Amino acid sequence: MAKVIMVQGTMSNAGKSLLVAGLCRMMRQDGFLPAPFKSQNMALNSFVTDEGLEMGRAQAMQAEAAGIRPTVSMNPILLKPTSHTGSQVIVNGEVRGNMSAREYFSYKKELVPEIKHAFRRLAESADIIVIEGAGSPAEINLKENDIVNMGLAKLVDAPVLLVGDIDRGGVFAQLLGTLMLLTPGERDRVKGLVINKFRGDESLLASGIAMLEARGGVPVTGVVPYMDLALEDEDSLTGRFDRREEKSIDIAVIRYPRISNFTDFNVFEQMPFVSVRYVALLSELHRPDLIILPGSKSTMEDLQWMRQNGLEAAVKRMAQTIPVFGICGGYQMLGERIADPDCVEAGGEMQGMGLLPVTTVLTQEKVRRQVSGRLNEMAGMFAPLSGLSYEGYEIHMGRTTCEKTPGGLPVTAGGPHGNVYGTYIHGIFDAGETAAALAGALAEKKGILIPTAGVEDYRRFKEKQYDKLADTLRSHLNMEEIYGMLKEAKVE
Image 1 (cartoon, rainbow, N blue to C red):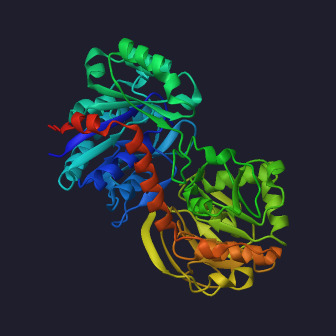
Image 2: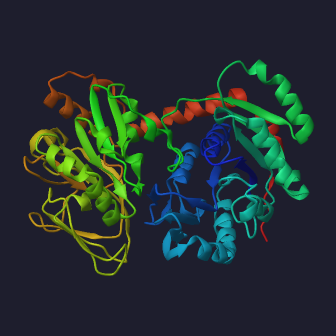
């Protein structure tokens, strides 16, 4: 059985996901075969494996850091929120159905055998499994039948690193309060504390760390500085949604309530002349160079939301002069009509935005597949993208028919001036020169010059980011202590 260690946090967005990715990267650099694991993830950013199975994108990112292909065993349970009180439940990459929070709370104990089986499969190929918890282990109202924090740690006999976020304040209270709310057996599993996202002079923490260790009875294994990394983070708490700066090339992404897979646009973060703003209000839209309608977990409801707050009318008006690009749910919205005869969402039928000559029928069967090829001939300002290679994946519950090109193309074009585009492919901008070509086309339309020659393939760029993450953690964590914490997993 592989050795194991678990990273838990005092709260959501304490930095667990990146810490797991960094540990995986360092362990791979040190000659081990690590793998990430998160028994249950709640996220709207998801990934499709080589086998066509769905998993949380955070675990796919961690697998990349570990230098291995993502598999659904790394995330056997994925919850995709459909409302404030319900989620689509995905087990081992397949949809089990929609459940309310109360229904799932009662059901989740039945998933323990699935978790054990996934963990065993992963342990067959890994030397070390680095587990990520969810939220906080001290959510005392949710501890019954816990399958993702201390309940999972007990299930596989994992030692725990507990991470606190000093950037949000009160890190000593976070860590000590969490330890106080754990049972004695759970506290014994916590072998190290990590203070994360620190800005400033670390020597000023010395007295606080000494008191923390004395009162908590657990050593501080490291103080990790705040890192400016262009890697994926928790989708519900991302700081990306707060960015307001407008650069030479300004891209506005419509941020509807059930936005999903907005990681499609991280590729532009390596370009210092491009800004990506997430827009939820009409007053925030301004005059961007490109409008993107991203994926959505509830296409019809999110389109209705745009219709009610004025964003739909603004996008249709701006499409006369500004290019608009829809991906997945956003692609469906741009069409003539969306029908939901099987009540996949709310049921019924509604008119689309009418910017693309396509119609969509939502279906119970979810399309999940990886795709690759070359982009079709594209007229208009994005003609420079024609023939460029793409590699990505589709994940949607709907069939879209294009009136002009039956059978569909990677990218459908149309609109009042041929400047509206739509596709089902997530990650379509990531490969090769696609993102740079798109930015260059926007710059040419604007009449400005931008330095696109030095823009890297996004995959190479991410590899450098993983190395930067590992180098920083190696300088600020006591890796000798962490390796000493590892123990052989035990699963009944």
